[in-house]
Length: 91
Image (tube, rainbow, N blue to C red; front, side, top):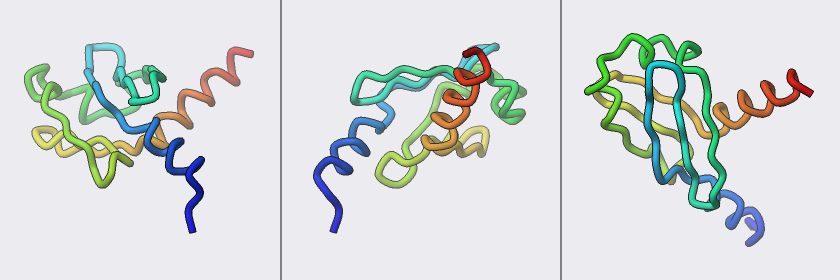
């Protein structure tokens, strides 16, 4: 059985806005968290034309982000782990 705390936590980490510029992938989540990861870590997105980076969709119940025009999939967990790793490197 899944606890309501886990459900609320998962729901808070569903992306509501995603955009990619020449330097970063920016993601804003339902719970208000915003993170950015270097687009260079994702060569398909880095090399894609800007108009192909615009269209994204959620995978599953929001566990991942898919760019159909680029054929790229990134998990929310992976993005958050990368963000935490970068923060640990700075501290």
